[in-house]
Amino acid sequence: MTQPPAPVGRHVLADLEDVDAAVLDDVAGLRAALADALTGAGATVRQLVAEAFEPHGVTVVALLAESHASVHTWPEHGRALVDVFTCGDAADPHRAVALLAGALGATLREVRTEPRGGEPGRVVEPISPGLTRTWALGRIHHRESTEFQDILIADTAHGVTLFCDDERQSAESTQLIYHEALFVPAALSARRRERVLVVGSSEGVVSELAVACGATLVDHVDVDDAAVRACAAHLPYGYTPETLAAAERGDGPVRVHYADGLRWVRGDGPRYDVIVVDLPDERPDDAENQLNRLYTHRFLADCRARLTDGGVVVSQAGSAAAWRDATLRAAWDRFHDVFAQVRYVGSDEHEWSFLIGGEDLADLDLAVLPYAPVSIDADFLRARTVAPATLRNR
Image 1 (cartoon, rainbow, N blue to C red):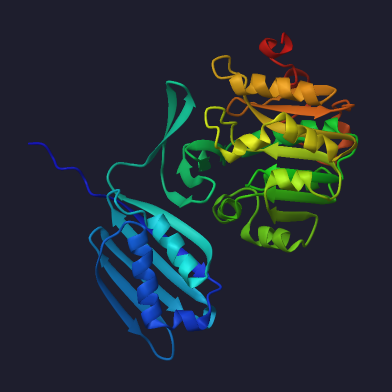
Image 2 (cartoon, rainbow, N blue to C red):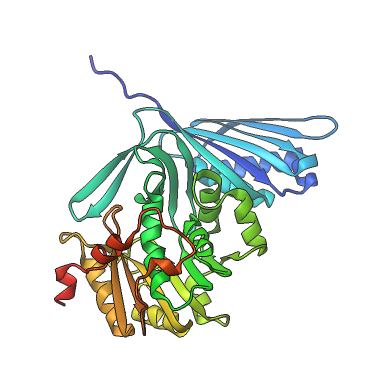
């Protein structure tokens, strides 16, 4: 006899902060806000129960056709703790939380997602046409859909791992290998490294490496504030919530700005010794994707215009594997069109490649850095800066 499918659901737990006390003590308003958020997320509200407590605080519980949701408020702290549990695909609990936070004027400080029932979670990562990689997931630390991307932070065989739009971006066990290959050769290629601009790279590891390599100013620009804050809250590397808060205030050498990287580069401001562009892969098959604006000749030329004399631009450029190197070949051509000199760097992590462009690249001498890399030595710099023949012969 065939067994019926197991119940499958998502349980989202969220901490909301910075809410006006009067809003958190308004029973009728909270009932309406929760009902509207759930309905807007596709859920069917069957019953709502609410109770006010003395001297303050409210609990609202919703019985859903899909399961349940609740809000518990602490007006004296400006906080509300929320949970939304839905089964099936009809309702989106993450959207319900986002809508509720918007209705209350809240800051969404933490979101945790727990899969309930069913089989262990998986991410099927697209690699190239007709080829995928499957990641088995353990505990899900965070799942959120922002205006720009779907974010997932979960345990995998590589430790706590960040996925954006189902593409793995970094993982606990190998993140330093990736970030050192991205930044250290670029820092060595520059004549100075006091002023650094980072576009993307939401984990914050590059900002920390830049300071370790001697930077006195790091402007970190990322369009997706939710992604940066989720990484700080849940990844065991990069920013912590405390160091991120300091960078958001501008306390210290790192300053975080939630802004469009393209507009930042084209705007007024300082010139930089090193500009780092660390984004998910180019999407040539998706003309509407906002990432593609930062993979153009024009953007590279704008970056070049913001460099100091002897400055460099480094960008994540895709994979060197012969069967998926189309974006790398396109980036190689763009860099050679824009810069007098181009240097290739191949990472030992996940087939990533990076390109460094400048007018007069310095020799790769590790002795000039105050930082001792963990995964890069002189032999790495000799071996991994030789571009594949498919590039050299272009």
